[in-house]
Length: 195
View (cartoon, rainbow, N blue to C red):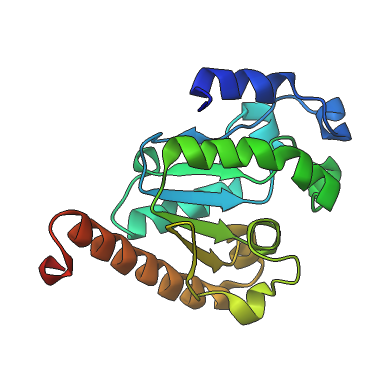
């Protein structure tokens, strides 16, 4: 049985599976178009996200908004969430047990949205959803297909704020995402000859 959005949010807000929920202001489930063909998954909420209860609203989130805009889209037309729904203390990387505790919620979100393409923002998202030994610097920008969904791992916007030289790589990755979405749209509307 597929869970409803309300049921999923109720589960997330009531969750106490790991210790992350103890010292937060808000759970941050994620937001956006629940029928989006494109989904972005990051690591976890930061201070701004924790205060507002919304994913990607701080400095990294503002950069993500610009990236989405450069793709010819708006935040309202994509779905944005994180591996963990509670802010880790001092914005540390969530440990594997914390990520594992939240993973069922993320899987339910993917099942409800049913995106065609998922952009994995940063190492934590890629390691959690692809492989534990995933190396973002070496393996970003390469498509991975799982159960009919295309995954594009790239740098997290926070990494671009620390090192602007990575912006070109991310833009190249996002151009691949735009091309893949166009290709999948053409196939859905009558075959690859329309691409």
